[in-house]
Image 1 (cartoon, rainbow, N blue to C red):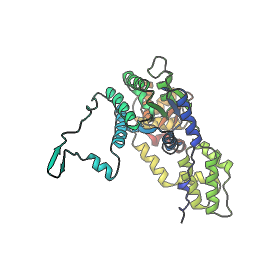
Image 2 (cartoon, helix red, strand yellow; image 1 turned 60 degrees about the vertical axis):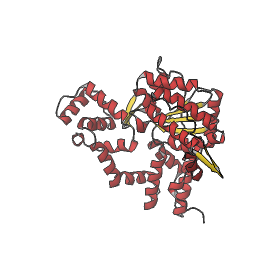
Image 3 (cartoon, rainbow, N blue to C red; image 1 turned 180 degrees about the vertical axis):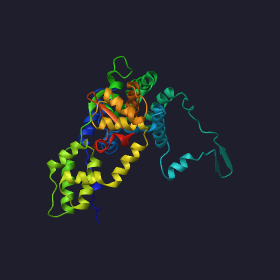
Image 4 (cartoon, rainbow, N blue to C red; image 1 turned 90 degrees about the vertical axis):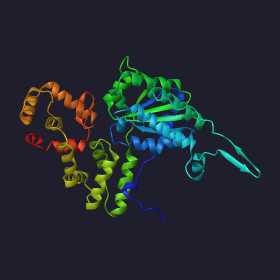
Length: 373
């Protein structure tokens, strides 16, 4: 029997886009790609399900590192990912791998024995992170026998580190350009631009900066087709789905969750479906928990931004001061904004600060400012 079709099983594959990116890398060896798109629009899914398989088909070895999860030490995260790949390349999984890990020092034959002594060992990898990166890349490429595709997710994290670290990464990638191609992704347009386009910075004009495309109508069509199969006689308007998708910031998993909620209630109107989804206590509890974890000032800064107030305006500063019970200065608000951006709650695009999660932004518009403090 075939696998049961569900909303969660709907996926869009983009092999042509993946092959196009590999073609760009091949056309300019040593020049990485830097792909920008907001969070939760499918970049990581694309790296795992499209770009990695395409790289393997081209004889490359894909290696993935999420720098967002290792913000304290991104170079160590890169080295760890490469070393894991090196271990996998040297010691295969399964029974043969276990045999390969077992040292053999003596062979016995009838009437005699032969002591083979210790197997020759390569010198240990350097302890210094910069030298280690260069060494492990070289060993992995040699062991694999082909090019490495190094995929660094949320690479804008690097912009917060000293120039020496970034210069090291660029120098190693340039030195090993015949052995490694690199793809950076970033969900902060400001952070990725600061990393890649700041004059005099180590990564200046090093990578090709591209906008990662959102999923198109094919995804919406699949959602609508499955909805119709679950509810014969009912249909979702694809144009209305497109409008809702744009309102959600083109986040496929979020749209899928809303359509699942609509399906559970038999709703076909997307506006009604969104309102029901936002009114669900589980959603509100999640947003409350996120806001409650912030300091009073940070919480109020998120709220005033969500409500469209200028965060550095004189009236807003006075409002914030009344909310937290003390004087609030421009420098304090700027520090709060920077912290909220680092935590992924706020983002900056087109010169404007906004809440990253569009539904959280809609939720805070309903909050009284007195309750935010």
